[in-house]
Length: 161
Image (cartoon, rainbow, N blue to C red; front, side, top):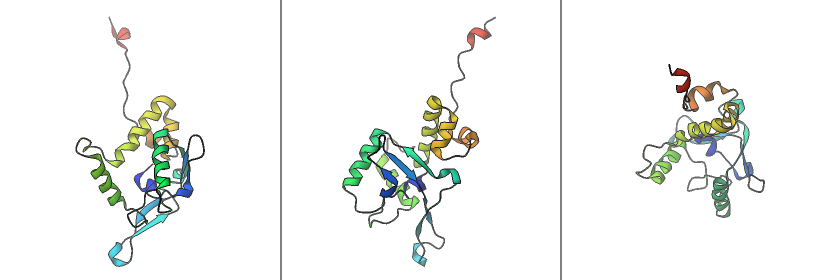
């Protein structure tokens, strides 16, 4: 998911009883112009960046286990709330990630996970599957910006004189 999509996930969007567990991507968190100090702040929009962003993603076992732990300890309708139980801003989500990742993973940003996911899925299931997981309508953006270049293959036998 895009970070703004993950921050918008509500418990009603998560199905931990299905096998595998699923999460519906049903919105994004946005910061309203003017900022919190001017009576604005954060809002959860019931749309995603694109019409293809509305989707259901199946979750791996380790993510399901983490969500089950969060479910037991939940104090909000949001899966990733701020300390007061409300929406978490993207800047605060990024700050929390920087604190959690430590020095060893200092180079890893939240937005780095999408290309990694896209590449792993593409290598096994193809570009269309990667595009669907990311919420893209076609493989063009997925292939151009998210899937890492692969090994060109071993063609040395053909090239031998």
